[in-house]
Length: 478
Ligand SMILES: *Cc1c(COP(=O)(O)O)cnc(C)c1O
Image (cartoon, rainbow, N blue to C red; front, side, top):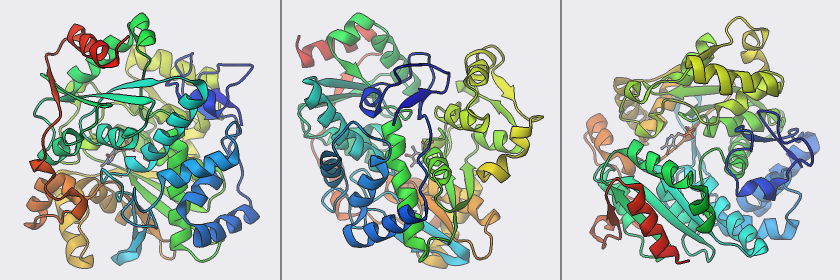
């Protein structure tokens, strides 16, 4: 399997999976995609059904991810999947269990990992792949990132205990929930460096950019990233779409729909890939919160990024984004993989005009029919109402992001087609909104008992790139 960029480069030789694993953007500023999606025929689907039933999630992951990787021996890939997906890392041996809800809905539980958000499913495999590839190359990697919550903690728990990876994770001082702070700051490991920056999340991101754009420094200290545009993260996410479809159906001609709360188009892009591979997915329902950049596109054909000042701080904060970093991949497929046009839209029009408009095009007109997409958005009041309603009807507490999904999913349920909502986090991470909706305290899984009382490991830092460089130099050595 070879990879292409959404903006047309590189030509030949095209890179393989391991070549792009440790990279971010393609050299032309585009995103990597496989040159073609492997097709899962009837026999493949039947094989996956048997595999999940007999050997479990890790075996399925190996089979699916293996279709995209031809530069890691298959026994090795299987071992990496076994290390990422097992009942020591996840709360259940199923890894991704499903629960039926009232009204034709299902929940796919993606939050049973170490940090109680779906990002664990991608990050755990990414950590194993990184360690494997770095070992093979005799290299080490220092991940430098910024987080407002879920991504940073998922990265830290995935890289914990690896020999060749160190993590520097910047957080805005005092701005994460106490639970999120405790999750990260309680980690006691010299290779995990939590940094609390005097400032907001955007300041943290600007610091990362400032340091990473000093190419001499970046090279000297082997700096890398774990951002959501990494192809390996996406392909790991394809697996849970297939697992959820298998768990909800009994035969391979039964179709399901998915409703996915999203902001960056990361999670639902993996659903699109699964559908392109031939997994029997009927509709992909996209749900946003008040930051409805993506919902606007799927309803109107206009993609208009927002200024940071236009981005609302909502009660589903992990979807508060102004531009969707993975969306370019979908547009590439939508436009028949016309890289010249994608480059024009993303590198020119979006930069000069702040938007592009596909509303009059035949591609946009056939979007639902060809790609199965529909969308809507949710508000704080919707979120509260749906948390309360699922609790009352089903006795299940869902987190605010998942509630956005439930709200939008109900609008598109088709009789006879199970509608699977992807659960994105456990309610314990967002207790305040759960209390507001239900008057109850969300259950806290035993693995998170008392984490706020553990000693905190965090370095305070002024909002200054020089100070950050000095910290990295001191910890890495030269
Ligand atoms: C990251 C995250 C999302 C949004 O994911 P996308 O990559 O934008 O699809 C939604 N909910 C939670 C809890 C998250 O952590």
